[in-house]
Length: 625
Picture (cartoon, rainbow, N blue to C red):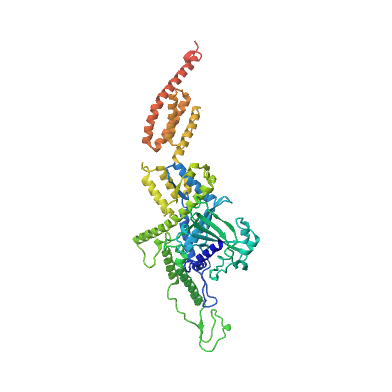
């Protein structure tokens, strides 16, 4: 079975898009080491590499990083059936916490972004490691993924092969694989001669690092996912010895893995096919080569100008006797050979080439500054139109990336709910550990990356959020708490956790604070009115307490009632500074309730004073008879 599968994978490897694999190797070398000069004009000539592609990739990576981590939550959950918003928010929060804190998602998604920008397409594998009890991600180098010819989508491929390289020591530490010493001897490096007894592998299929190890300390394994009518079958074998069982074949659990768990992030959608997307290096390769040539020739020109060639009249000279120092007299009319001047400005030519390359890629925020004709200044209308076009280009790129990211999120959530539901019952927020209701994990959700396609432009987002807040503030048709939350999130997602509070929870906290203060006031002690108090809510809480006591015909201690009235007046005074009209209306309600009670208190106090006076010696005037 493995030998037949190995032949199919070898054919897939041989039928890769013409020249694709070779180009990827060239682009990798161009980005990291640079393509060097084939021949130098003289031994000391410069051999420089202009890092155009690497610089563009470094500027593009934050754009994609912001699509993933630019918002408070990684993903937005929308329940497919009616349920409380708190449950949906809890599911999104625990998913966000789990991926950020308990998996290698941060490292692998950044590696995938780097692979995508360089190669055009970047596969990333998502699976649940049952032995380690952990969700895992693996950003795969595009060269190490093989699909059949004509494959357009990895989830619809008939088979997908992940080429895994590891050292012998790494192989020995992985208990999933056959640890027999004879097996290790036969699969490491190029294998042994007895491996080909059943049929010689064709030399044209041989790829160092893909079909066999680069040396005897390296093992190459093929992990092949085959889509069948019954589900996804995984077979792992060594291409140099496919008949040896490295790991027993198995079927993936259909509920957890309804599709091959490898997803491709594409930088562009162009021709149909897995190998169609182009990366930065392919699109700007000619520009980088030209820039490197210009840079080298500029250095050559400087060398010739700083160390010119000399000629002279007459017989040959002994150059060792000639010293070119100020005041030196040289014989035979020694003079410098006129090399002429450079036909153009090297710096201007290099700058124009760089701008052309960045314009072709569509760098975020670079449209407003690109002027191919640097002698003419652009008008404000031109700048606005260029910025608009570049913004649309960036939005399209973001939408392509976000669609692929959504597929990865759905796979991750599906695996977590199936294998690690107990780990999702709790998550840690700024205020401490919080629990998630079991109903939130049982619901079905539509999962999308948080934010919008223009989320990379944080200053623009913050400006729009501020304008939106100012124009919609106080509108009864707008959810005001969510409007405030959105404003904070667009400014800095961390502010939501530290500053924003759910209105329902905040109201409950205010009521609890005033209830505690009522107990203090009834004992005859004062309570301070704090600036953070919601004054109408505190006043209504006191009025509610007084009305409840009256309804149950429970008398309130006169001293406590007096302290309550004084505390209400302090809240009314503070509220009057915020909203005088509303404070006056609320004051009328308070007076209607509290005035009769205060009159009773005054009458009782007068009666008590009279009783005390009568009890004193000498009568009411305190004089002896």
